[in-house]
Image 1 (cartoon, one colour):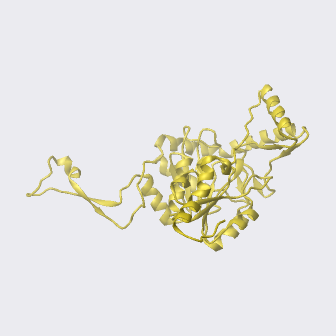
Image 2: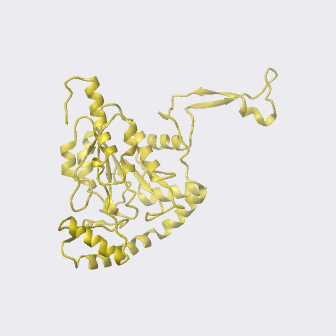
Image 3: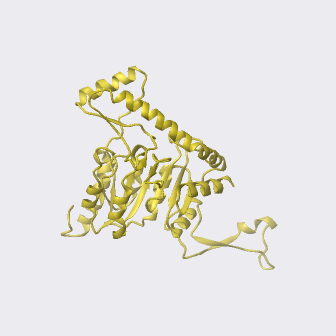
Length: 338
């Protein structure tokens, strides 16, 4: 099957223990959050510099999101700020390799691993990036990839992959993704007392027996189509070439924009490789200069975006950041406020 081949190829390429394809990067993030088994009062630390899909699944849980400051040069999670946010209630960290520039994973894992905190890499931007010779998606506990048409690798416009370090997590994701029920179906095989209505209908008259395996919640149909997986498999043959071309274009853009006063470039660390899903640069000098610069680029036919709106300032982000705190206040007196 194409899907099995694509998953195995991606697993080996990424260096992960398991890789399971899904229908989108958003679904991969939703499944990752389900694996955390979050309980009321838990806290999750997340980057605010990302698309809403990174933290959106947390709105379905009675937990508190603590948004962490970012490094002003890389726009990735700042390890020093992360260390200051960790409490005894911290269960997970959600980070993004912004634009394709890998986060400082060794420092982040040094903070989280001794405390048993699960780290989820949103690697939607980072297909083709390298961090000290290793690939995003296998640098932490869970990796989530997007194969949307805007990404460095695509599968017919939509698709995703979740990479995992644990066998039991992989089994759970497979059961959820394939919409498996929490039980074993026992068909009536017929007999003198109760034959099947028609020979091919023996599976239409049976019972489900509960099992202790459990998928902890309802399943869903998140299986990638065979056609999409076949496209992804072919695209992997060209992925290095795609990233090399993006890198050459980024170098030309560096030369052009750095000629303007007040421009600061977005670069990877010397021991990492930027995947350049996004080409990002910074402009100092105030809002008026920024707006004039953007309008000038637009007149010249250069597409430019202001990315992203900080999630901690959005209504849903503010709700996620305060929801669990409010729940604790209703049920517990004298709880610590952070």
